[in-house]
Length: 203
Image 1 (cartoon, rainbow, N blue to C red):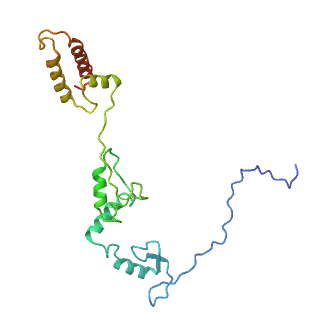
Image 2 (image 1 turned 90 degrees about the vertical axis):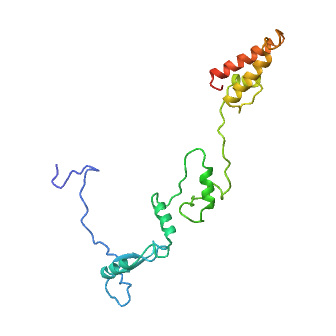
Image 3 (image 1 turned 90 degrees about the horizontal axis):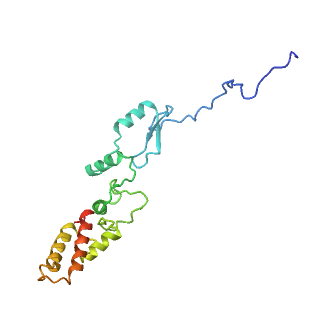
């Protein structure tokens, strides 16, 4: 092999580049009146403008921070709302339970712009009343037919089913009609409907 050849596999050379000249950040002067020191310490301008800064020297930044109060212009109620909102980063939150109509009422009554009232991008409308949903039970065709045989609708409760059943049995039973067997088919249908509702726990 030639003396001048050096074997360098591609991708294996892991040498670090020599340190170059680092660019120094722009030297700022302290913004405190009458100070000529370099201002390397940032301090926010106000609670409303937290992303805008004054640049002070270390001594004046310490003095500024000692006298600065984030909650100076807020009432006790505003401070409490801010602290509650700080728990979740002042992001919109809502209840994940089914019925949130009560929370919607309190949100409408709340002061606009309050931390508890902030809902993000107006997802839930501008305070429109949300109707309270009554949970509906899902019934099979057999259960609906049994309720219809008793002359009831699908919203009838177990107490209403039992009352209706006893009333129809008293009316349609052959012994109550003096041995007349003309109502026997209707009586059998009522008894069968009640058995279906009882086994499916609707009676």
